Length: 446
Image (tube, rainbow, N blue to C red; front, side, top):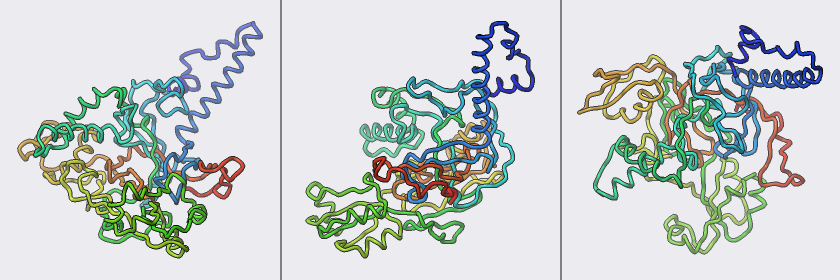
């Protein structure tokens, strides 16, 4: 699209307006409409590429800050619009045509990453839209978890079946898992590649900027050694036990979606309920709550007790197979790379930064016998070429974010959500509150 636009309006090597010389009035009239449509597409292409893009919130990872069903205007000019990596692409389609399920872009040529100057930079706690970092390789039938996570667990399971005592590395699991994933076509489907700007768009809150040290202790964010004040919309999962009194009206007022209201089957999970310290003979809910919602339920008639959900199992977060004693709720400390900063290479940080060095910054990188080799040469340090960010959802226990797939490179940043222009509640009917009028023109930046 971009080369066609440049030639049509600037270079003019191809005589695009040849049809205007035709003596057939009907043909000229039809081509006039075609010309108008093409001009409109060109205008939309430029707006969508360099100024604004529409984005719909698909999941609850940012609730209660942004809700499922919110439609956003995303400003690409805020952080500087990117020059397209894939210039030959159809406008307004991210990567796949609907219905036909075919690619909406041509992979060649691929342009190097360049970003025009923006009028702002990403600050800590900004909400940011970005391309999914581990979305370069995709199993079309099973995109969640991402391809690499699926390969890792398939490989780990296969290796453990053969040798329960094995402690394979991440690379060993990937090598085995790739073959398994590609062989399970019914489950995973076709394996495809997507360039940076054609990967899925994600939206999260940037909780860590380049140069930060980030840590989580019992769900408390700690940046550069200082505890951070919680964002008002941040929520965590809780177990809420009642004496049988209905709390549905309260849950409605708190706008907890029906999908998020889980009433635990007391008969099936009786032993687990007992282990949590609850009475299996009384109703037990599993709900995401903000601090304000927690305080409301704590003072709601019929609520007996509330307890936050905890996770103690390690090894299920980034970096997989990194042998770090980290969990979703207790994570780090971890350094967020800054452009130009030097990293001392060692066995501890190798699994944390290997994807950055190898995939995002396009080097060959390996560790052999405790020594590190970058582009075939032994190295003791590495200097980062880009800035990186740490993105997390406000719905902290229901968000697949940097804790699970790592850093977001600067070349993946799309833009900043600035405005909610429409909001639809999937749990309501058209005449029963489906349109959230109170969210129209809401500032989406915080």
